Length: 330
Ligand SMILES: NC(=O)c1ccc[n+]([C@@H]2O[C@H](COP(=O)([O-])OP(=O)(O)OC[C@H]3O[C@@H](n4cnc5c(N)ncnc54)[C@H](OP(=O)(O)O)[C@@H]3O)[C@@H](O)[C@H]2O)c1
Image (cartoon, rainbow, N blue to C red):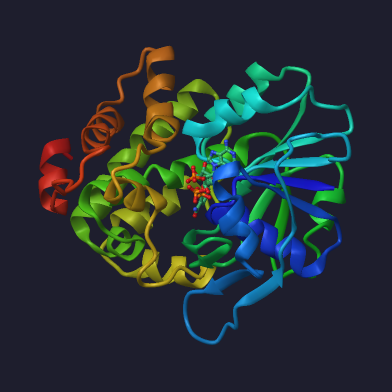
């Protein structure tokens, strides 16, 4: 049995793929405030951005208002970091058979779960796709559907077989660190209100992203942290693509990840809606590591500070790419 907590973009997309093949029974945890809305929704639905893909429509999982884990083998945590402690506080003792599957971006969530539940078995599920919520239990996926699972048994990966979700097995935290490096760009999008295409085609944004990555990769290497970039190429090649002037990075992202013209990081939507972001778990993680190792991280620190200032604003004053580049001095 899989219990999914968090019926947002990631929770809806993962539930839809799982329910489309029903290799494992799935339950979706619902809070009181959402029960009436979710009871009226007929199916799970995932749209694909771009032409030619029909939506995936799957039966709605069992809705439950209980966090009992008695019959649960995999507890999927699909909430934002700001809500993680609330969920962990509400959990009963974790039975031995139950693994906690962490889908949250960054490595801070894994650390927090290990701290709070030291005895629990934790599986890192790195979400490689980009998802957006359209309406309750109805989401859109704007990239290729892919997840990386750090998993000692094949059962969890097997739950997705035949669903169209590409599942790659990994070991350790290298993939999570590699994904974190890519997610460092989310702050650039959030501050300039731009898309992934802008990031990979506009020179000012590319120069900023290169500086952010150089700082972070230098630090990881200094700290002896292994990272595995989502693209199977060494960092120096990836860097030279981003820092160059051709449109190759965008073509590569389209071809490899299925990125679409209008795709944007969810931090863009969070800032737009005046919500708190996961900046502390992304660029903030690099700043924290820099402090630990006595290495300054001025570029990532300034991004953290700028994003924090925008959080909660009704009309955030976005910067142009050139203005942001000037502010960062890169
Ligand atoms: N979206 C993406 O493309 C993407 C890609 C990679 C990784 N991720 C990561 O995946 C995680 C989830 O992201 P998301 O985009 O799915 O966020 P999201 O759309 O905001 O979904 C989170 C859901 O959790 C619900 N929730 C909050 N507290 C809860 C609680 N105590 N019990 C049950 N449900 C609760 C929220 O409901 P309310 O809003 O009503 O509180 C919301 O529906 C984040 O860490 C994100 O960084 C996302």
